Image (cartoon, rainbow, N blue to C red; front, side, top):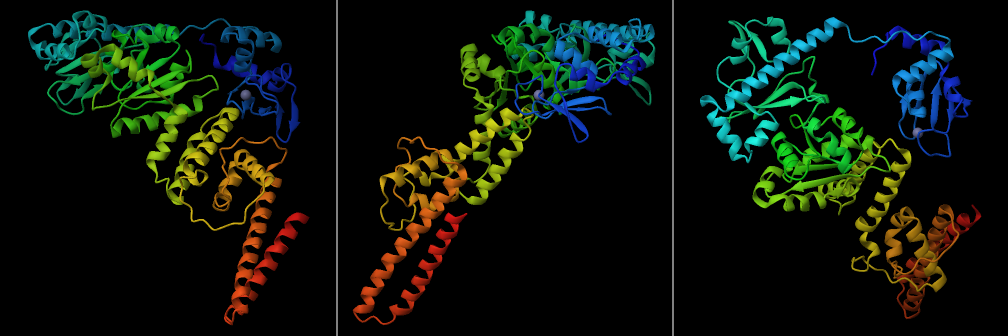
Length: 539
Ligand SMILES: [Zn+2]
C-alpha cells in the first residue's frame, strides 16, 4: 500500500461525509444515532448495515464488514487504495499529494538488517556441512531431508561459538542487536542461536527475516525463534507461506500443520499448500493471511490430547472467519505420529487418506461437545449446549450463525433426546389411545418444532407414536402447536384420571371404604385440568 501523509487521509475523512459516500450506493435511513441500510457486501433483506456519521465509519452486524470512506470505496468498487484516494480527493476538491515512499533512512536501515540475515543464513548453511555441523546434518538426514530439500529451505547449523558476533565485527552493534541475532551481555555481544539446527523464516518476498532454531541435545524448549524485530513479527508470520502461496491458490485451500518440519515434509511430498504457525500458537493474523487467498482451511493436528486442545483453540480463532463459502476441516494424525512420520512410514497415500477424511468444523464442534460433557445427564447437556452456543456466537455472518444454530438444535434433538426412538426405555403410563388425526398432528409438531418436542418429550414418548413416519403437511404455527400439545396432554390426563376414578368407584362399591377420599382427590384434579384446558382455549 502506498504511503500517504496521514494528515491527508484524515483531511479526506473530515471533508467528506461517510453518509454521502455510502448513501450513493446504499439507501440509508436514520434511526437513532446511526444510519441504516442493507449491506452491499452480503445479501440481506433487513438492514443490518449501520453508518456512523460522527465517527466516520460503517459496520455491518450481519457480515462484520467494517471501515471508513476509503475502505468503503475500495471494497464497493473493488479498487486499490491509491484509486480510492484519488477518487475521494476529487470529490473533496483536494489536490492529490505526491506518493510518499518510505523514508530513505528507513529503507537503508532495513536493507542493512536484510543483509545481516542473508549473510547469517549463508554462514549457517555452510556450517551444516562442516565438521561441527555433523550432528545437525545427521539429525536432519535422519528426519528424511535430502540435500536438495536442505538447499531449498536453506537449513543450516548455528555452532556453539559466537560465530555471528565474531564475523560481523565491522557491523554496528545496534544493527546486530536490532536483527535479534545477537544479545548484549556482561562481556559484550553474544549469539542468540548456539548449537541449533537452523530453519530460516522468509517473508513473502523470499527474504530471510528470522530463524527458528531446534535444539540438538534434547534440551527444552525444542525450538527457539528470533524475537520480534522490525523485520519479523511472529504473530503475523506463517512458516512456509512464501513457498506455499501459489499452491494455496491452485489447490484452493491451505493445510495447517503444527510443526515446521511437518510443513516442509508435506510441501515436498504432495501437499505444497501446507504451512505451520511458528511455535504452537495460531493467531488471528495467521488466519487473516491465509484467508486472503481463500477461506478453505484444513487443520492437521496430532491425535493426542494436546492436538485436540490445539484444534479447539484453532476453532475459536477461525469461527469469525467462517462464511457460507468457506470449508474448514480438521484432520487428526493418530498413533502418536505426526505428518512427517506418516509420510516417512506410510507414504503420501496414507497422508492423503488422513487429509481426505478431515471432519468439517460443524461436526468437529459437535464431537467436542459430546466428548467434553456427560450428555446423558441434563446438567451435562446444558453445559454442552452452552459450549456450542459460545462457539457459534463467534460467527459474524448472522445468516450462517443461524444455520449453525438450527443444525445443532436438530442434532441435539435427535441425538440427546432419545425418547423419540422406541429403543429408549421410558417408564410408560398406559395412556388412552389416540386417533390418527391426532397422531399425524403430533408427528408434524415433533418434526417441525423440536423445542416443543423437547419440552414435552416425556409425555409425547408415552403416546406410542412412530415419530419416524412421514411428516404430513400442515399449517400450524409454533404457538398453536404448543397449545395443541398442552391441551392434548391435559385431555389425556383427564381421561387417565377418569379411568382411575372408575376403578376406584368399583372398589368403593365392593366395600373398600378408604377409596372415598381418593376419589374426591381425583375429582378435584379432573376439575383443575378441565379449567386449565378452558383457559388455554380462551387465550
Ligand atoms: Zn454485511
